[in-house]
Amino acid sequence: GRRSRWMPMALVWAVSYARVCASLAGTAHERRLAEWTDPCEGTSGSGGGEPDHSILTSVLQRHVRQGEINGIRTSVVDYSALRQDPTELRRYLEQFCDVNVTALSTAQSLAVHINAYNAWMIAIVLAYSPAASVLELSARVPEGSIWKHKFGTIGGVKVSQDDIEHGRIRGGLAASFGGPGRIHAAVNCASASCPDLLSEAFDATSLSSQLDAATRGWLENPTKNPGLVGGGLQLSKIFSWYGQDFVQDSGSVQAFVKKYNTAWDIVTDSTAVSFADYDWNLNAANATGTWSDAAPRAPRGVLAAAVVAALITVA
Image (cartoon, rainbow, N blue to C red; front, side, top):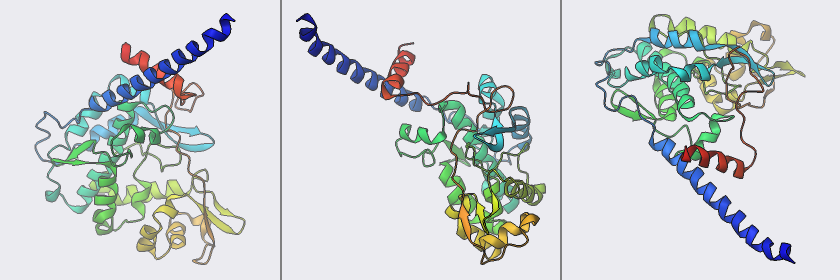
């Protein structure tokens, strides 16, 4: 009857609509990437001196606080509030444009790069508004990895997050300063299981004590490093990914962690080590500084995401 004759046509329209929406969604993503502007483009920068880290401290103190995500005690960022006025953060990032890193001391350079990594991570989240995790942004950059896209500039050189962390910090600065293990407590990947963002920027004059405090705080948080479990030691998966850095630092992973958590004095190099699951949920907060069910979540279904993107594009 009439229903059976209309069914094929309805299916054709449905498929066509889905394709159009998916195409519009892709276009929206491409436009958002194309609209990204490195703060160093079209600016003369800070004149080559060391960035004023007090600007980042101001941002952190106003928009970062302690909260909880999926049972994990962690620092959370009020991205919604910061997105309303990112002027201060952008002004800080502009100071990296032509900083002469070769003229800095090792401590100054390490502080500069740790702060750059953390500030850029916040800026990336502000610009792209991931629904649930920074990992979803990898599909929206040509390299296929959010860590490999060169979003920023340091000293006239375009850099990615991987360039900063692995090429510069882990690539020599951390060892030269004497902290190849401790730096892992300092860089924040905007996710629940990452080591916390401090309430202040790192600074050359107090860098060692700041790294010590960050490392102790990270290792003494059982929701990120569970500790002594069933006769063994359960740690963040960071110790699995970058185990060699901690061996370089202290001879073994076990020797490193017991230096910063006195409750683990019984740990020896023969203590079995296992690794906790890593939670990549975005470290976002609502106005009260706690994770809320009202916070943005990933859309359910490809078509729903396509329709939303299409509406945004049309608007």
